[in-house]
Length: 352
Image (cartoon, rainbow, N blue to C red):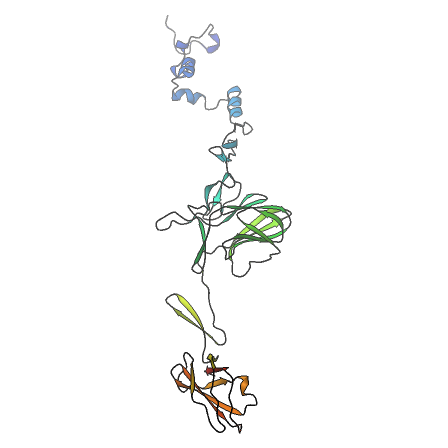
């Protein structure tokens, strides 16, 4: 007898259903053993209950996976605190800075790197960074091989050693600069200490004149708070001519001189002369001495010696030749006069 469709209902069946009697797509062995067809996944589309609870548990936000080493924290909020086991500074970087190694502070920290120069070593920059809440590092990368150079006109001073500034107390400002001797100086109104590569100067409330500013740092209650970089890659200096001064610019050099049309200039010289005895009513011969720059026709302001006092003599001086002054003395005393050797001087004033 052959059964026909609809002869039996599912409730009339009994016994155990073998895997061979089930559709291939939901074979339990296939699900656990490897190949799972798309048909099988289709049956799981709306699964709930225990399977769904386990899936939700595995993906729950409260489930954490903490890591350690150079990278720390949970997978959702990792922090790179070290590189190759060396610490990384928490100091925020500013525009253009890169992460470099600082031997002075023993950590990786933001630094400004100088552009390469033509030939030779690349010079380091004399910058200031905060190594900790109470410590500043000045010129962390300065060395003899890569000096931090500062220039005063045509004089270049080289800073070859990093310096540290340790704050111990106070609220105020530290002014970091290089003076004309090449000394890294920290002017301040705080309580702080400088390492051997710098000097601390108290009572300073602004950058002094004639120095090269590097940076200023604010401190609040014994803690460094904020710094300002005052370095200038490009700079110039304007020299204005005051009254009686002229400034001439030529070939990159400024020449400052006295304006002879406003300020008179003069040349002067003196000599000891021993005149012979002069008879009454007569004059001495012409005696001369050198006055460099004197020109014939220049007006001479004579300087007579004290032996003329009461001697009844009169004298005259003039430029008799280039660079030469002549002296003539006449006697009107009524008796012969023999003047002692004395110093005679002549001054030529120009552009009065």
